[in-house]
Length: 313
Image (cartoon, rainbow, N blue to C red; front, top):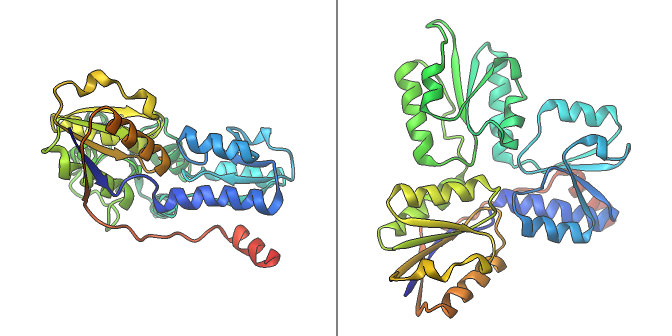
């Protein structure tokens, strides 16, 4: 069997920044450091940070008054920030900068009188945060059927945005439906889908025609990891989402000559390497890197972390 390794894969700049934010906060101020929601959607990452003293909470009521709280990479609605201020919490914002861009656009255009159409999974924490910027003016659509149910009049100004971790294929179908129904609808000059999501999906597309099976290494709660599976399946290739090497089922490899492997944007590389080693043990004899592009994006740590590091240095 031959194994094609898709690149880029694994950690993106936003995930690296979010994880480093928690690690630096623990080094600077010690445990516990509270984090609103999982800092990223990956159990390996959360378990490692928990072992160092990070405490992940869903509600701010679980954070003692006056404590530090870090907002996850997925972002939070303004109502959470207001609650934090009321309770005297010290806020550290690890929201990915690309998510922040979408938040800013939602608020800016809602303030201009637009109705916001937000394409995404309505229960996903990122979508909840973005919709919270203008809840009375935001409508969430998940699919083409949702677009058909929209009933805005011809004089209503419309602006659409997307969750940053969606499938390019799904978004294309939904946006085409939106544009067909509302030809004057507006959006940002560049896609709301983040560079890392796009690169990982495009990189996987490069190898789907050459493989019989795709393995995506990522957490089942990770949106971008699930979307990678969909990219392969949409192209007629069997795909499985696994979070550890032990989840690889040897029966999947029967009569398989070529395997494609990628990883979601919150998957640690050591987990990926463990899966590669397991596949070699199962009979892979040739491993080839397939590079779509090289990423050199770096996001600066949040200001409270940078300022504290300067004081302690």
